[in-house]
Image (cartoon, rainbow, N blue to C red; front, side):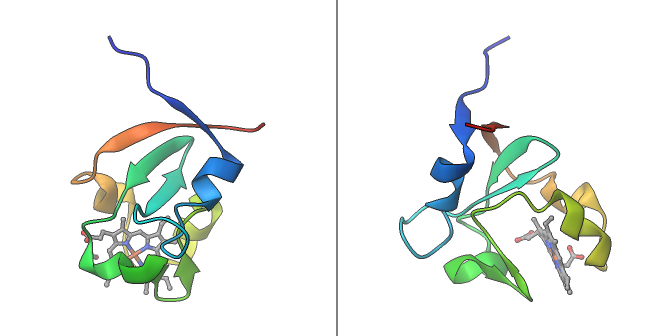
Length: 80
Ligand code: HEM
């Protein structure tokens, strides 16, 4: 199995929908590319922002983690 690329919180933060064209969010250690989602345009999703680890915030959502199923995992989040 191919190892997933590692990204730091700093690299994730640049994919917040403002600084770079890609829009990424982290959930449970994995980074998802949500650039194509019309619900994450400019990195904003209701009162949540991309470019961060949103694991703890899923409890505020009206949906489960099943929303991630259609997105590609592009890497793992590492703290450096
Ligand atoms: C106030 C909190 C939130 C609200 C009101 C909200 C609302 C919604 C709604 C209405 C949808 C589309 C319908 C559905 O799939 O159920 C959706 C999709 C989604 N949400 Fe949330 N959400 C919230 C928080 C979050 C958080 C914290 C995350 C990340 C941990 C998240 C990640 C996603 C993703 C990845 C999708 C799929 C987008 C797509 O398919 O294009 N949401 N959300």
